[in-house]
Length: 449
Ligand SMILES: [Zn+2]
Image (tube, rainbow, N blue to C red; front, side, top):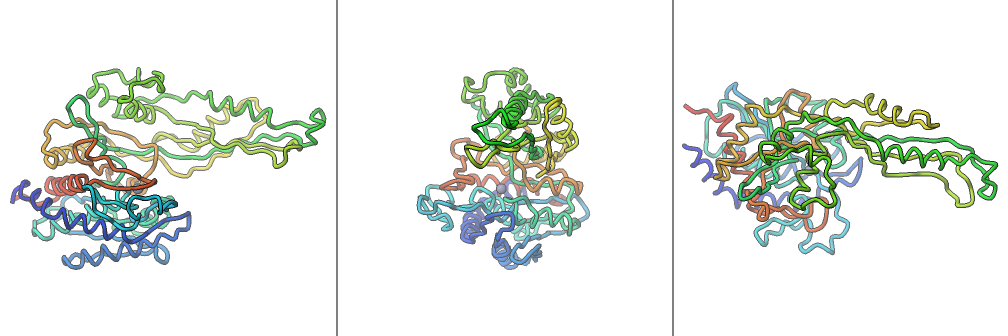
């Protein structure tokens, strides 16, 4: 058996992977809010039956009724443990009658699989599960082990999914390294193809600043103390806040090498008038360079003829790995110094990151080169401003990258409609994922005599 044979086996399993994805889309595991329901157990059962037919036993662990999580492991020797992650819940569909294909039909047309969850994240789950199945069918001896984990409840924070698994079954997630969603988009620089590999994610906090006044009748403003006046100053200060810059993320070194251009210039350039082709990269660099504080909601008053007694502004805060809630609280108290204002800060997601480059990232890059047949790929390590389940698994000790590679052609591989209308995944992306996962297994856990 050679790596080429394995990649051929991946291609032969492509139709079956497409079918599996369509079956997964047909289970409407919609996660509508903080308490679901997600019906993820139904998705787990489709996967469990599929794996059982191959003699792979899986565990379905429910964190609450119908909130199932599936874990299946191919064990071999005591070598490296590879973890392939994905989530089984999807965001709701509000406009089903506007979709070109019904959102839970799993229609295969125009070289893509259509439906809610196709791109986020059931395509990756189908590829992960089929990678395990192909390895099992070929009977390749493993020097290490492969764990496929499909978690519930990613879309509303992971309380019933990977967070619960990490708290209650950390042994089942034990791994040296792994891959998850959240990266793998492809870009072109001249005629050279590059990929973004996500090494981490920013944290998210909500900061509420309250100012107190003294309410009264709007017709007699002199007798009251209008809190909108200090609130205006608070908002101005928050908008003018200049975060501490941190250029230590590896994306800056990569940008220097890949772009042969000083990334600091892109941090300061005027975004609106920038060349379209540079905007994606600029956003990635800016996101990785600093915390952001963005006022998003202002609240005061319930009647237009009454001066309210208090007012509030709420900000969305995205932190870099290493920036704690205490740090954010200090930033707010410094920024608001001298104002009659009080900030309360709440963490909704902790920042997390894996090191880069590592021996594992080198293997991911080699595997992608083999899978795509391109030996001169460019690599850009990124940090996402959103968050994924990786943040629950990294603290258990694994190096986890966000990398679900799309086809090595930005146009061909464009996934559409994530969290929106007409979600779809090009079949070419599914093929690239499956080939890459198997090539990675070949390089990490398959035993080579
Ligand atoms: Zn997702």
